[in-house]
Image 1 (tube, rainbow, N blue to C red):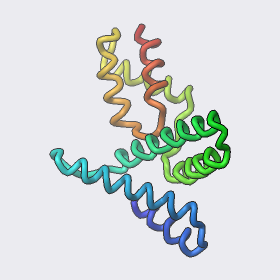
Image 2: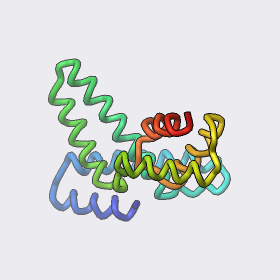
Image 3: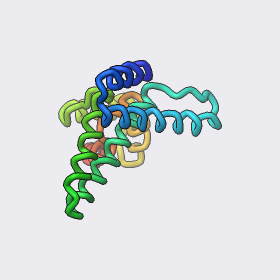
Image 4: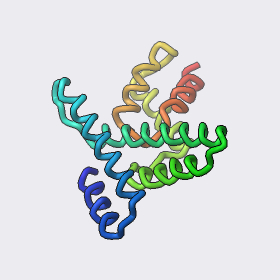
Amino acid sequence: MREKLMDALKAAMKAKESAKISTIRMVQAAIKDLEIANRTKPNAETTDGDIASLLSKLVKQREESAKIYDEGGRPELAAKEREEIAIISEFMPKQLSEAEVIEIIKGIITEVGAESMKDMGKVMSVLKERYPGQLDFGKASGQIKSLLG
């Protein structure tokens, strides 16, 4: 994933796309911050899954900012946030559909033998481990509750 970002940065620099350059550099800085934070943990390697989760978090932050700018009457700033979302999304793994997520959750529930809400943590941990950055875990949490409840 890092190589893909570097290649995109080089291409953007050659094409003189300033918005893309600044967004990719911001993503690289966020990855560097994540790597620094992970140094204190055992097995301090930052995986593509960690980066995918980070990208998902960055997109969510920008969506919230764009919404706030829209409400505050600042459409030019909201448009800039949405442009950054589009650029960051290019590097994210394919997002799973709601139907796919429900099927995956059902499979994990069966696999871990989850029977009640007490087992929700087990299901979420397997889901986060296998599908980082590919789905909205907030929505997945609600789906798990409805399937276990």
